[in-house]
Image 1 (cartoon, rainbow, N blue to C red):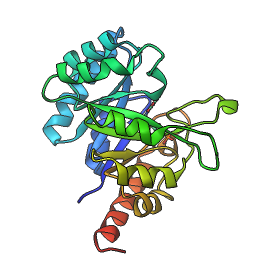
Image 2: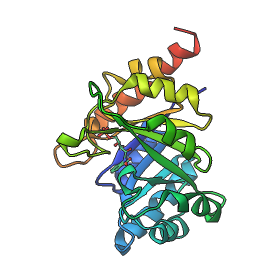
Image 3: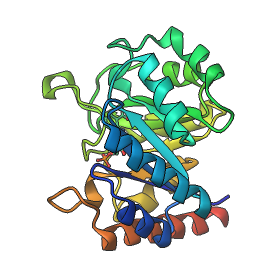
Length: 237
Ligand SMILES: O=C(O)c1ccccc1NCC(=O)[C@H](O)[C@H](O)COP(=O)(O)O
C-alpha cells in the first residue's frame, strides 16, 4: 500500500500548495481561524484545487469550539478536520465529537490528534487508550509529540520526535488509519516507516524556511525518502 505523505503548512498560500501537489504530497494540512474571512476563502480555494488533483485536505480549526469546527467543515469542506489534542477538555468536550462526526457532510471526517510522549520521556500518557476511544468516531488519527509538562506540554509543530515504541504498539492496536507526526524529516522518515508502519507520515518544522514557508527541496526529499521506505517495506525489507 502506498504511504500517505502529508505536509503541514503554517503559512499556506495557494501557489505553495500547488507546488506540494506537484512534488507528490498525498495530503496537505493547514490551520484556519474561523473568524478570518480571507483564511476561509483561501482554504476553500485550496480544497477546490486539491480535489481536482485528488490530494487530501486537512484543516485544523484555531478556535476550540464545536460550533466553530462545524462551521468550517460546512464552509470549507476539507477531507479531514484535524482536532488538536490541546483543544480536548479546553473548549471541546470529547463527548460531543461522535455527534459532530455524524453531522459532518459525507466528504469530511475527523482526524483526531493523539498526543505521544516526546522521545526519551517516561511521562504517563494515555495515548493508546485515547486512540482506542477516538477510532469509534474518527476517520483517522494523527500521532503527535507532546512535550513534557516542565517544557510547557506543547503538542503540535514541536519539531521533536516521540516515543516510537508507543507509536508502533498503537498502530498494531487500532483499526483506523494512523498518520505519524512529530519531528519527522528527510533523514528519519524512512526509519520511522519501517519501525512503525503507519498509514501515513506528516512533517512541518523540518521542512520550513525561517519565515515558515516551505523549503521545497526539503519537501521533495521527505517525499522521496518516504516512498523509498514504502518500497522497501512492501518487499519485507
Ligand atoms: O495536532 C495537533 O494537536 C496540532 C496542534 C497545533 C498545531 C498543529 C497541530 N497538528 C499539526 C500537525 O500534525 C503537525 O504537522 C505536526 O505537529 C508535525 O509537526 P513537526 O513536529 O513540526 O513536524
